[in-house]
Image (cartoon, rainbow, N blue to C red; front, side):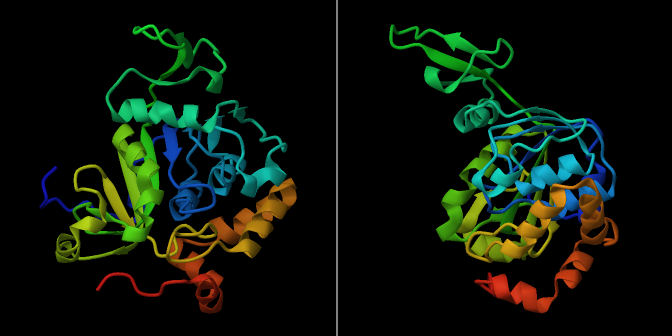
Length: 294
């Protein structure tokens, strides 16, 4: 990829390239920067049989599964923000959440480094014979655990800004929050980055210290302001607690979930319609930084 290539796309186009049955990884951290605008489009387009490979369990992943898009989930245990749903079954989904979070993430780190496996502390993993194995120290030290690499077919992450060439930027005070997303991008075969805003190439060139992913690592960049809602977006807006409660309540009952999906996903043709449904007052209430880059 060269700097002159334009990889800007609509959310609809970016998602249309995700095949049924793809291995999918979602970026973000705990209740921050979940790529939910793209997730809702995956649900609208009716993708099926997705295989989730992750290192966290969040509302975006849960939403995909309960909407019928997911066949398998292989990730670490539920995060605290989803603890009320941790014990609720996902119909027709094979769930494996036995992995220590660091073990789950080490799989991607190996792929990002183009290595067959990563090493973690032995106590972190249960050797299941498929994804982990005991690894003696060739230098005579303590036993470690080898974790098989994981290269997802698709990784979806959310950031602050990008230009049309795929130079992805975060505010400097939020750089550290993006570290794991960088690894996901390097590990995956196809990378979708949704951003709060598309900026000019001159803007990214004038502030290279903000760039967390250089052009060439993303395959599509899509503009999705408030695209992490109802989760937070570091330094831009806080999580929408009421929206989270609404989903948690609906997810407990099939009938309520169908109503929630109809109102929040299926009846809305695109992300702009979703924002219009939220309304300006609600958006302003969670906003912490109104302007981004000059």
